[in-house]
Length: 256
Image (tube, rainbow, N blue to C red):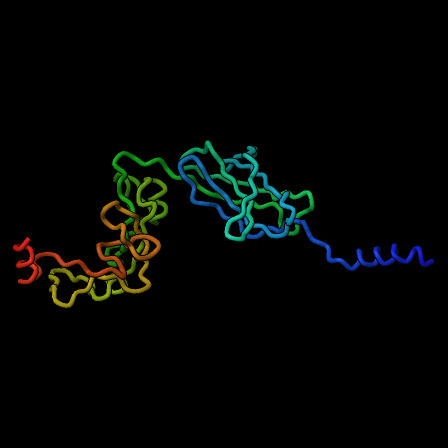
């Protein structure tokens, strides 16, 4: 009996040790903004401590029956988080698609292993389509049912529909009235001129126009937030002064 005691202790110790779960657990699936012909995806996962999880993807145009297979996803780690990530290539511009993603792990999957998402590739820019990163304000007094017009014969009820059809204004937004947009700019009235005194065209805190612009080289690269603001005045930057700057400035320039 004493000779078999160590075996009993080893077996008992093995029963007491915690087991490591290698099964993958799906979390948030993100569809990155599609381009003309590509779409990217990253799917966060937990578990899978042995790193053998992956994902497959199938896709089809909206309304089609047959699924097409894409490239299998790769396992990546970013900032302490684990993902399976991949892309679709060779898509058609301005087209609605469905994608079916399946999380695969030899150790099993705890949670919803299959997800279907929809996305639309960007439309090819039309000739002269140079307008983007603008803020539009819809005036109730003159607003029609379809206020956005493209090529004179196509009318759209929303900015999103207009952008999809025209390829323009894909990053533009709707903004509130002047009083909800600027620090101190009253709503304009018909046949009334602005008086410069007291006007303040800086954006109000929380305005949707903040961080809604894009970088223009040598113009607004010194922005303060996540992206440049719409309009000429960047929040957090000194208001520029145009014209003469007083006698001291004139004298210093003459000395140069």
